[in-house]
Length: 102
Image (cartoon, rainbow, N blue to C red; front, side, top):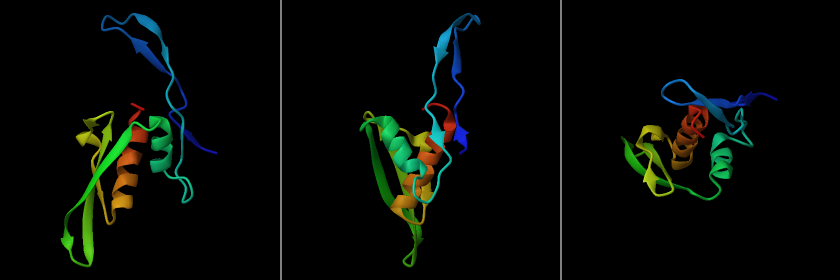
């Protein structure tokens, strides 16, 4: 089983002083049964919401944009698009999981 973000991050001050380790969350490589979206929701412990809307595309090929909202803060930097709301959310969740900030 492959694991992403398994190593702890070293937390240092601006002058390079070591002040301890902050553990990263472990996200598994996505599979059809367990993608990044459920993993990020599990990590957020209920603090993650989504704004998803159609933004482009012709009638038979719509494009949706999903923006994660974590604890009331819109995370525009993780906004992604997809051919369905679910696909857009999965792409945004993937960006969050692979960012190293979760």
